[in-house]
Amino acid sequence: MKPRDRLRIAMQKSGRLTEPALELLNRCGLSFRQSRDKLFCFGEGEPVDLLLVRDDDIPGLIAQGVCDLGIVGRNVLQEYQLTAGLEAGPLSEWRPLGFGRCRLSIAVPQELDYREPKQLAGSRIATSYPGLLGQWLREHGIEAGVVTLAGSVEIAPRLGTADAICDLVQSGGTLVANQLRETEILLESEAVLAGPQMLPTDERGDMIELLLKRLDGVIQVRESRLLLLQTSRGTLDAITRLLPGGPQPTLLPVAGQPDQFMLQALCAGEVSWRQLEEIKKAGAREMFVLPVEKMLA
Ligand code: PRT
Ligand code: ZN
Image (cartoon, rainbow, N blue to C red; front, side, top):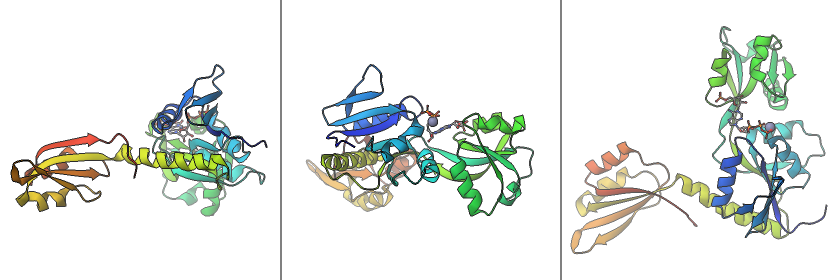
């Protein structure tokens, strides 16, 4: 394989993960020129290019070294690792990315009186995830038939080709529409940054490290809020106790009012109305909750 001096990231060409993945990369300071065939996007600024492909191809492209990193569902990554042959290099989940959340679950017809996994023994289960399902069945000591389907798994029980299914669930709407009931969760999934287990030792490795640092900043910031409020010396302790988790707050004196402070606190998550109301009751005034734009620790 010819060495490359530019980093190549694989992501889904068109699907659920496309838009949030692009937005995340943009937030990390990466922008791309849209090419005409839309398969390859040249990166402007940083030496990072994009390859737009079907999500199922992403782990293989990384394992073969065609791409250095990929943004893909944990479900696809783990299925690949369980089913790809020995020639596939081991892959790592470098970061969970917080979007594309769903779960891989077993669902049975609503009318079935399901109580425990053992009841699945001897049944036929339709799935697009034979690797993950097979692993779960082995772990539970269940012998069942695995019917591998590329899509439309949810209609298999009605067609009589399977007794149960194992598929991705998000809202649960698809299951309800097909008179199915979720009974076991095999995997909690979300989009992840996937890569080889070892960083490349050339400039691409440095670029990956830089990207990971920016990514951590972006992910942390996405969940962070800056809380600003005014307080007097007497109520300071009570207010500090109510602050949602995060580092110690900063206090700034208010000009001309020796007893008054402006308090500034970085909160590690959403600050709810209820929390604000409690903090106000404890004596805070002039409260603001601000989103954080960028952060570099
Ligand atoms: O063309 P390509 O192969 O790239 O696309 P694809 O059709 O295989 O993938 P896509 O875009 O459907 O999903 C990409 C990834 O998004 C998946 O691998 C998951 O990691 C993640 N994801 C998150 C989901 C869902 N939520 C989801 N709800 N993938 C699929 N679904 C389907 C599910 O299969 C079922 O049919 O949506 C239905 C269930 O949704 P609810 O809301 O009715 O429960
Ligand atoms: Zn796919």
